[in-house]
Structure formats: structure tokens, C-alpha cells
Length: 404
Ligand code: AMP
Ligand code: MG
Image (tube, rainbow, N blue to C red; front, side, top):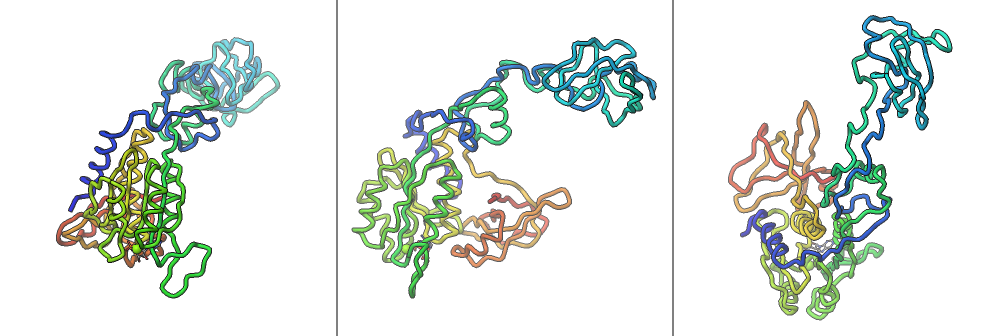
């Protein structure tokens, strides 16, 4: 059976070999809509930042040498406020009142905080504390200089990036257009969320978790509903989804008599690259392609579906979006309780991670297996338990995938 790593390599190498470089065109979006999109242009500072020497404290602009001995009395010769500087020159023995964000007047080389002063009169102040040169201010260009590359194509636009785009004058931004993803749930037992399950029935949850995961990854998902466990219905549903960028079918890919999805993939000419991965949950994960479409058959159990999407579909979406980081993010934590290994498969087990005593500590959460969303909802990570005999012992370092 293929390891997760090998499966992921296959997905990525198929994508690299067959994908047109411009498949997901770059599109322009308004700045305010650009959060979490993948940036498709390098962005350069249009000016020095800050654009002038600026106070970062409310107080008095001074010459630091005047405060070698404190307390010291200085005469106040003007006021510099944000948006309007002071047309004064600070000479020895003088100072200028100044507000955060205001330009530093000529001659000054530090800002003393108002908290460290006593106002004596309209034109004099007593300073109680010394300052170092350049204390309380930022020099022009300290953060970035005009023409510096401040953001690189491939970044997922985060909050700081968005603020930076705004401050450098980008009212619209080039980002990757979203791959379209068709989502099909399968199963005779499924009813829709708003329906009441009769004997033997359960509600369809996979369509919604897949939809949400696709959205989060940056794709444009479309729900194609539920396909029943017969060839005609699956043909019709899969036929509707086979021309999207990615088609995801959940359920119907195990060994059961009515698991017919792979048969229908074959009828459509899907070139299947693998249909099993040595992971738990998520073993019956199918990946193939047909024409320009990537095709996944994910195991039907709700936790398996989520995990398989996270490990295989999300990296592919990020690749199509030309994101710089495509792989699932792994972190390390100290294991707090023993975790039994499986010699056949890597196990990805819902776990609770917390930061305590200067490090991440992790322990598995109570969990009843691959259908147990209740257990998963109580977890905030998946611990990666290696494929081998024996047990991972408390105190050992374990890898985990953060899930929030
Ligand atoms: P399957 O892979 O079709 O054999 O399904 C495995 C298990 O997952 C069965 O217990 C199904 O009832 C359940 N299941 C399949 N599809 C869904 C779905 N869309 N929502 C919730 N549970 C599902
Ligand atoms: Mg089924």
C-alpha cells in the first residue's frame, strides 16, 4: 500500500506534468475582497515606509545629548502633530511637543515620552528621564524603502499583507482565479440535512464538510447532491461533474458490493493512479485524472473524508492556485499519553494540543473511529502516529497536523 508521502508525490507529479501553467488565470479583485486569496504579483513599496522620520510616542522631540543629566528643563518651541509637522529647528536646550505619527522636526534625534515629563509652563518642560539616540522614533525607510519587494507572488494574503497592500496604494490586487470543484455524495442511506432520517438512514454531512474545506483552500465548490448506489445514478452525477477542474465523490469506494464509484470512473475513462493509501482513517482514497479534470474518490466515513481531503485534495488546490506552500502543515509536540502504533498504516488520530510550559503538548482525544465527528469536534489537531509496531511513549516527540 502507498504511503501518504508517496500518494501526495503522485498527485503533485501528475499535476506538474499535465497541468497548463496558466490554468488558473490571474484575476484582479478589489483589495477589500483579497483576504486569503493567493497573490499572483510581486508587490513593491511605492514609497519609503515610514515616508518621513516619525514619532512613535506622544511627548517631546529632543536632542538626546541635552538629557545626559536629568531632570533637565527644556524650552518648548513648537508643536508637531500627525498630518502637520512643525516648521522649527530643535537646537540645544530646546524641544518640540510631538504626537505619535507626526514628523520629527529638524535637529531632534529622540522623542521622550510625555509620561516622563512635567509641564512647567506653556513654553517649558521638565524632563525626568534620559533617552538614547533614535529612541521614540522611526527613521524614514526603516520598515521598507521605495522599490523594495514587500510581498512575493504565491503568498496567501493574510491580514498584515492586506494592510501592506493598502498602505502601498494597491486598491486592486492580482490573485489566482478559483478552481471549480464538483462535490458528489453517494449512498442509498443518505438524506439531506433538512430531512428526518427514517430507519437505516443518516444525514449527508460530507457534502458540507467538503464544501467548506474547498472554500477554505481557496476553491469554488459546487454541490451536485447525492448519487445513489446504482450505476445509472452514479453515471448521471459523475457525468455532471467530470468537466470541472476537480471532481470529488465521497463514499462508494470501499470493498462493499454497492461501492460502484470506481466502476463508473473506469467507464468515463478516468486514469486511476491509486486507490488505497496506508493511512487510518482514509485508506480507500482514489485519485485519477481524465482530460483536464482531477478526480478523487474519498472514503465515505465523515472523519475519513475530512482527513483525505486535507492530505490530498487541499495540496492539489494550492498547487493549482500557484501557492508557495502546498503541503499539509506539520508541527511537533511532546506526547503526554501513550499512543498505540499500527504496523500497517500511519494513523491520524484526533488529538488535543495545548501550549504549556514553553512547548506544545499533545494527547489523543476520546474517539470512536472514522465515523465519529463528535470526537473530532473535541479535538484541535490530528496526531501522526507512525506506521510501526509498539507504542509511542509519553515524553516522545510526536508530529501533528493543526486542524484549526
Ligand atoms: P462508504 O464509503 O460508502 O462505504 O461509506 C462509509 C460510511 O460512511 C457509511 O457508514 C456511510 O453511511 C457513511 N457515509 C457515506 N457518505 C456519507 C455522507 N455523505 N455523509 C455522512 N456519512 C456518510
Ligand atoms: Mg456508501
